Amino acid sequence: DGGITQSPKYLFRKEGQNVTLSCEQNLNHDAMYWYRQDPGQGLRLIYYSQIVNDFQKGDIAEGYSVSREKKESFPLTVTSAQKNPTAFYLCASSGYGSGGNQPQHFGDGTRLSIL
Amino acid sequence: AQSVTQLGSHVSVSEGALVLLRCNYSSSVPPYLFWYVQYPNQGLQLLLKYTSAATLVKGINGFEAEFKKSETSFHLTKPSAHMSDAAEYFCAVSDTGGNNRLAFGKGNQVVVIP
Image 1: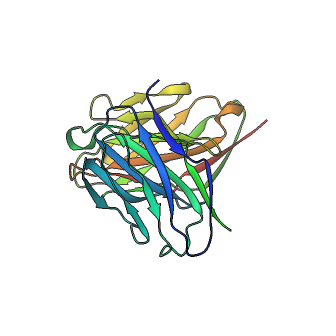
Image 2: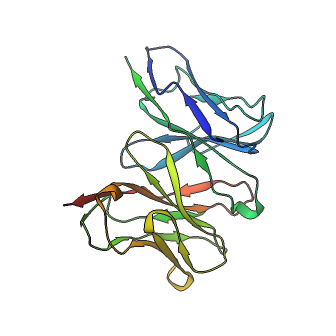
């Protein structure tokens, strides 16, 4: 079955530590996205990538970094500069369609907490 | 930039009653619109999408939505609520810049009362 795999499901970060969230897709999608979800705030875009070796900042990129070395993979690093990292993180992918008519497909998320 | 408004963070509905979730969008051009559902500790699942074909769109689990350009709305309905419909629902509008970005509303948490 094709889909998006996020790991780990739960992650704990110590103060001053960087952590990396994994996202892998086997849908052969060109575009991939990272969102942060906080209660009552919907989904906010952190970074997105439309092709390999290229990515753009979303609305809340500060304190986060990404890479896109392979089409299938789009890892997100939460750096120590992100002062409030506790949230639910969702990865998504989509085919590249005309004018944005392609739906995004989501993984099951990673819940990050601070120790 | 495109945006979506969903009013009422929590919506309570009796089992068997109509489910109505409102979504209004702002867009300078005809948009593409989506409804997603999220169950606890899971990702989002696509319910249905409007991509400029029929204005009444049928989705999974008995849900449907109607695109009304004059009202800039894309409300989601289901004639008879089931206990399994308890979840959070998000409306999203596509960005028109050709980058496939979506702008999400803040969501509606639906509670189904037996």
